[in-house]
Amino acid sequence: MSAFKRFLPFVALALMSQAASFAADRSAYDQKAFEAAQASNLPILLDVSAPWCPTCKAQKPILEKLTADPAYKDLKIFDIDFDSQTDLLRSLRVQKQSTLIVYKGKTEQGRSTGDTAEASISALLHKSL
Image 1 (cartoon, rainbow, N blue to C red):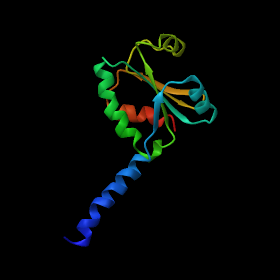
Image 2 (cartoon, rainbow, N blue to C red):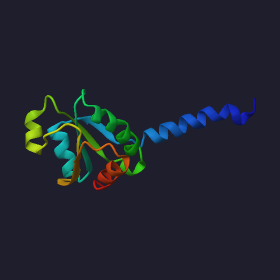
Image 3 (spheres, rainbow, N blue to C red):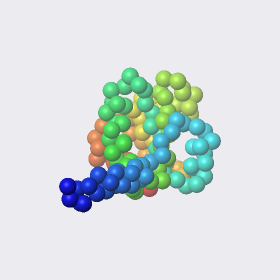
Image 4 (cartoon, rainbow, N blue to C red):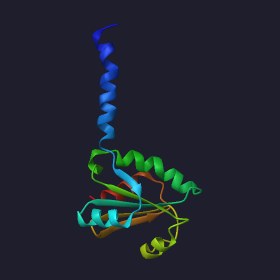
């Protein structure tokens, strides 16, 4: 086996870990963390979903792919459960699961509901930058 072939798996591993380091930060919604991200003028995505929602399930791999881009390394993604966080949904004026809301700091830049098209989700995310 050539030295190159022996070295190749290590190169692939290094590239994969480099790509993973660009992934956006995703966590369950927390009011203090959300306010801190807003105060830091960071790009923010609120992802309102439900485990039973087929549209939400279709959005997840699209969001994972798009937010792996280095442009979104500072993006903070907050997951909001449609079934249990009703007070928060009311304050955000969200009426349906599969709602995506983007902010740049404290300013809402856009939202969509039920969208599973990669191009339009990408355009929405781009508004947060």
